[in-house]
Amino acid sequence: MTNDRLFALTFAKVYPLYVQKAERKNRTKAEVDRIICWLTGYSQAQLERQIEQESDLKTFFARAPAFHPNSSLIKGVICGVRVEEIEDPLMQKIRYLDKLIDELAKGKAMEKILRE
Image 1 (cartoon, rainbow, N blue to C red):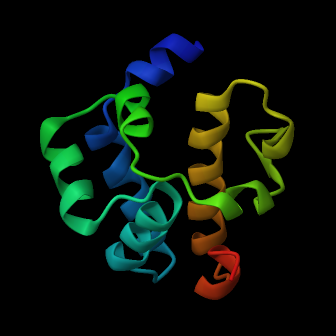
Image 2 (image 1 turned 30 degrees about the vertical axis):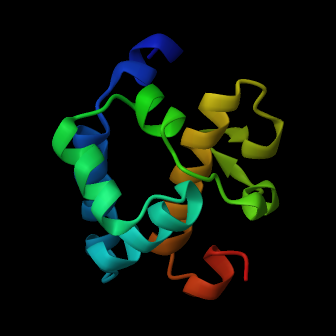
């Protein structure tokens, strides 16, 4: 998938996949929401509004109130690429979120996921 096609995906289509991945590993939708809100600065109500509005990924991340300053502490490989080495800022933000959801699904403690 090209970056443009990925960026055009609606967050409303991607979000349920994150929740499904977490729930298959006995984690919760609330934990997924907490991770998304931590990373983007959205409140729960703002997150729900973005889902309802079916914002594309580009818009979703562009409207994020405050991308967490500790996001730079997110390291590792997702889809065969080190997230800290991704040059495109939008792609890096998307992959940061992917990485955090992966960590949740792998059973990592929420404090470690949120880099506390």
